[in-house]
Structures are given as structure tokens and as C-alpha cells.
Length: 297
Image 1 (spheres, rainbow, N blue to C red):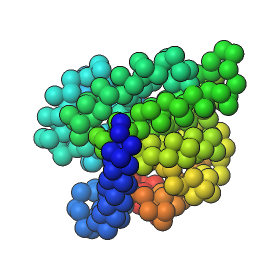
Image 2 (image 1 turned 135 degrees about the vertical axis):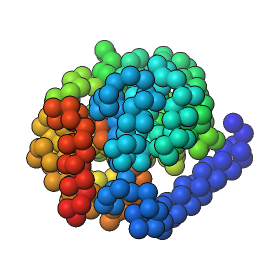
Image 3 (image 1 turned 60 degrees about the vertical axis):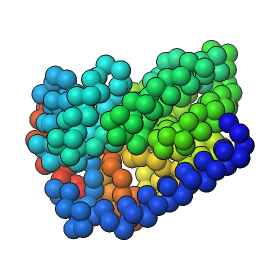
Image 4 (image 1 turned 30 degrees about the vertical axis):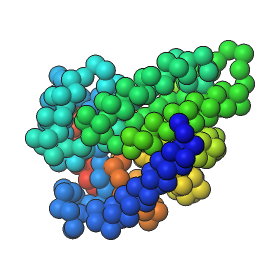
């Protein structure tokens, strides 16, 4: 890309991001929009983990709408009918908060995969535009034999710098997700907030931020509110599950009411992804626990 055009697009993206943040903070509470069925927090239910009756994604989206959720999130897009998703969202008023654009393998922490990843990100951006999604998760990858963690992270930075202009041009944010390696993702190269924050600051794009999954952060480092404050400039999206168990809020050790208040006080008004499995598969009861955690602050 021409340097002058790159500067123009980056400036435009920064302006758009600032405008979006301003409008969100000014107008997206329950009293003003009337779109929230409870509390202040806007939740995006993960249709993969919640089940919601099974079947194709569009059916699950309609089920999420019946439960009162304003948004959904999901994992891969390639096994889904995007046109039917678009129709279901239009019918219900549901928004797709984010989906997975690049999975664990092959890892973006190995430069030999970067050309392939770049093509997939371009196609994922096109998918995002079709269904109105503003954000897409990208994953760093599992450990590469013969590479140090520092080398792998530098490769992730290199890749994200290559793909950032695409994201800026499209207005679709790439959100990098750190995992936990104690319970769920042993052998993954990126875990905890400090390195994820460092990577995104090095990339330096308003359209490359962190998918800050509070479940993974709790297992890896704890101290959720302070850590979130320290890396707040790089938070692009929040996800949650309680711990232990990866169930809905109110089933484990995390005081999510306190965390919701902290995020609100920091200025977060976007969706929080419910990437958790409802206890006993009961989506209605899990929703009541979500409501209770949100109402408690």
C-alpha cells in the first residue's frame, strides 16, 4: 500500500473508532436504546457452546433472540450458510458480535503460514461484511518445534502488521485471543495479558486488539480487574465463562458483577461474549444466572 494512503486509512480508522466509542458511551445504555432486556451489559451468546436446540446457525440465532440476547458469536464461518445467517439477523434484530477468522492450526506464529493466513483473513473480512460482523478472532497458534516463545510472538507481530491494513480498510477488527495452558490449551504459544498487550501495542493498529477472554485470564493470572485496567488500551472485545467448569456466571469463583462494573467504568459498551456451556444444558436457567450477575451491580 502507498505510504500516504496507509496514513490516510489509519487516520480514518482512528477517527471512526473514536466516533464509535463516543457514540457507544453516549447512547447505548438500556434506558436510551430500549434494546436491553435486563441490566446494562450487552451479551453475545456463543451459539456453539450454548447449543440452543442444535441445527444450523440461523436456527440457533432465532433461539438466542427468544431468550432475549441482542447478539451472538460463533467459531468458524465456513461451515455455515452466511445468507441464512444474514436473514435470521435481519428478522430478529440480532447482531453477530464476532466469529473465528483463523483457528489454532496452522499457526500464525510460523511465517511459512502467513501467505495462506493473509488470504483467509481477506475472505473472512468479506464474510464479516456480508453478515454485519465488526470483529473477528484470530489465534496465534500452538508451540512451534525449534522456536522460542519470543520468536513465535515476533512472528505473530509480523503477520498482524501485514494484515492490519486490510482490517483498517474494511473497518473489521482483528481480535487476538490469548488462551490458558493450565486447563484447556496446553502447548499454546500465547497466554496471559502482558504478552498479548505487548504484541498489540507493537502492531499499533486501531483494528488489531485483544479478545480478552476473562475465563482464560482467570486461570492464567487472576487479578481480573487490575489486569484489565492495565491493558485497557488494547481490549477489543470481552468474553467470559466462570471458573472452574467453564459455565455461566454464578457457578464458580468469579464475581462477575464486580467485573461488569469495572468494564463499564472503563468505558466498555460493546458486547460481552458468553463463551460458556450452560449448566445441565439448560439455556433458560443459565440466562437467569446471567441476568442475576448483571443486575447485581
